[in-house]
Structure formats: structure tokens, C-alpha cells
Image (cartoon, rainbow, N blue to C red):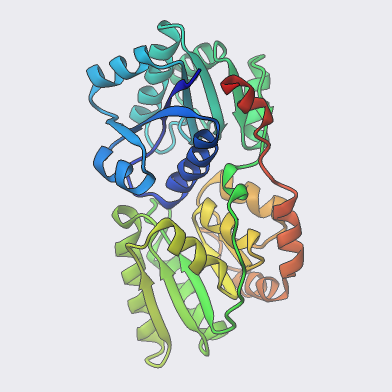
Length: 338
């Protein structure tokens, strides 16, 4: 019997990481003979990109009707249940789970990062909703320990983007810089970063990746101007408006990658690209620690020269080996669709 599945997440915003998670999840669900509907902020775009049925996330009557008709709802992946980015989004994703549970649907929490949840009432809501879910998987130790504190059973898994196949064709003349707008990214930080990129890689082409134009494009264009103001001869390009496949291919063909976004770093590490993280979020810090790559602070710039030297000394083979050790296991999720 074909299972009807609904997927709820940060979809339709053209965010590279979340759309890659959705792409990986859809590829598995389609193999399992399922009828899939995705809740998306842009249903037409999601349908076109992923070849799947989509319903507007914010059309509550249609959302409820879709949930009533489904067998299973999958919430995630990504960092949906946290209030650092937005308390409203946490309430929304919690509401979707609550509606599904109210109508007695099986709910799977899929490879999420839970927290930080600073608002005590929000934390109360989340913990007292997800404890009733059928299966909970989280992608990091902090999320696992947070749920354990509340006596909620969860399985610690790797991020599903580790499942993507990438082929590393090293381009010794290209360095990737991936930036996004964030409240703690200062102009001083960007100036220091730009000078070090020119100092270390003036003989290479600098590709600046905008992976969600609404948040990335302005800062990427600004950074390109900074580089060109420091050196008129340096070759730069802002990479924007590319398909998921094209972005993954370009990231995996770099020699070096300096990145803020979690999933950009995963793609780079998986391909053996020597990588340097920018610490805007705890998930990036955890990834840097796990993969043993250097990490730039947004506040203290005193050790940046050392971090760039560490970047150059990384082992591509060691990065690829680390990524291979993080493969996502689908077996326990598949049992819900047998």
C-alpha cells in the first residue's frame, strides 16, 4: 500500500542547505513508493525544482487538509526547532507537529538540530510536543543531550547531506568564499578577511558563493568590491542563481573553501576541499571540531594568520575519510514505509 507522506521544513526559500536536505530525502522516499507532498513557501518553485507535489506552508486550511489525508509527516531536516533565528518559525513548525499528532498521524523528526531554545515557554512547548513523535533523529550531540535531559528518546545521526555523491576535481586556481548576512558579521571582520584572502590567494580566482540570495547576495557583492579595492588584479566572481547540482559541483571542485554555511562546508569536506569555517552558529563550530578544520571567530581576529596557515596544511584525504565516516543510515526510517 502506498504511504502518503507530508514533509515540513524550511523549503521554498531557495536556501541551498535545506533544499539539498529535501533533495536527498525525496530521492529515498521516491524509491520507497510513496505519495509525497511538501509544505513550501513557494509551491510552484518547489514542484518545478524537485518534481513533487507542494502546498503553501502558510495556507493553514490547505495544510490541515493535507495532514488529515496523509499517513506520515516528516519534520525536518535542518534547525527548525530553535528560537535564535526566529521564535515565530519555532512556533510554526511546532504547530505543524501538533496538528499531525492531534489527527493521530505518525510524526518523524528528521535529522534536526534542536535548539538553542532560549524562551522557556517555547522550550516547554517543544519538549511536550515532540515526546509524542514516532521517531526522532537529531544531527548533533547538543540536540541529543538536550532531549536526553528531558527524557526524550532520540537517535543521533549524521546530516543527510553527507549522502550526496560528489566528485572532487581539484582546481588549483580557485578559492571559494561563502558568506551570508548575520547580525554578528561586522565590516571590520569582512575587511580583515578580505586582506587575508588577497594576501594568501592573490594568484588564484576567488569565487564568492551566494547560496540564498535574499541573505547572501548583498554581502557577497560587497566582499567582492573589498577584494578588488585591495587588489585591482585579483580575479573575482560572485556565484549566484545556480541549480543545486551546479553549486555542489562548483564547491567540490575548489582547492580551498572559506565558508559560513554549514552545508557548504559539508560539501567541501566531503569532496576533500581544504576548508575553513566561519563561526556564526554553534552547528558550524561543532562541524569544525568534528572534522578538525580551523574556525574563524567573528569577534577575535588575532589568530587569523595562523588559521589560514592551518587551512593550507590540511589533508584532503583526511577530510574525505571523515566525511565517509558520517554516512546517514536510512534503515530505521524505512521501516515506517514498509
